[in-house]
Image 1 (cartoon, rainbow, N blue to C red):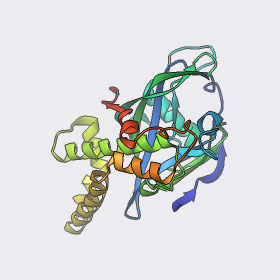
Image 2: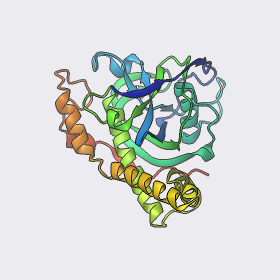
Image 3: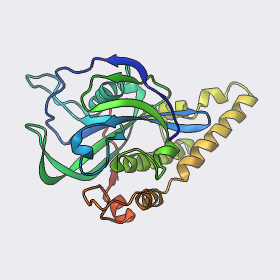
Length: 281
């Protein structure tokens, strides 16, 4: 699979007081996106937690950086907000440093049924629960670094088209999260272009769509126009059910524990509910 160079070979020490059982079903998820070589790229980490791949996949797969909201200290205290969790998980799993809340865009909240978890000891219960994935977007190149996180390894950049390929190396759940999130991302870009976004949202998409670059010269304006067209054409073309169907068809699995293996693509996709994101000050 074609992909960019792997993370910088510097292992960051990130383990500490935050490595405790979570106290909430809320998850902060970070989509690190960039445009490079005429294509959209996304950062992924190899999630080696055996609960994610044992009896489901032959080996650990890639996922978006993210995790459950935690307490800040071993002694307890305030639960992290979803944006705090997303930023911390971006640091701990992908080694992305110096990201502020103002740098990321609250995109959507996804509700999906997942294996139940006992939050007192961070173990699965054998039941089902609804998980809430609060998804945030960071736009632009960032340096990825290997960390000493126990479950996340090999942070690297992927072409989005490779993540959507039937030969992808990603967890099925995370492919669906990326598919749905990018579809919504495109819709938000459309809203910006119609003048329907203000404040923080408008400022974010000004950066994404290179509004300042377009003002530099006539030549720059045409370059930005072509860039916007390529980006939007790609996002508009996303068909979640067809993409999921193609991945299912290319990866038949007799083991029904694999997510989606006993369902049609449409049924699996309909299990994801997309809602507006939490309000972030």
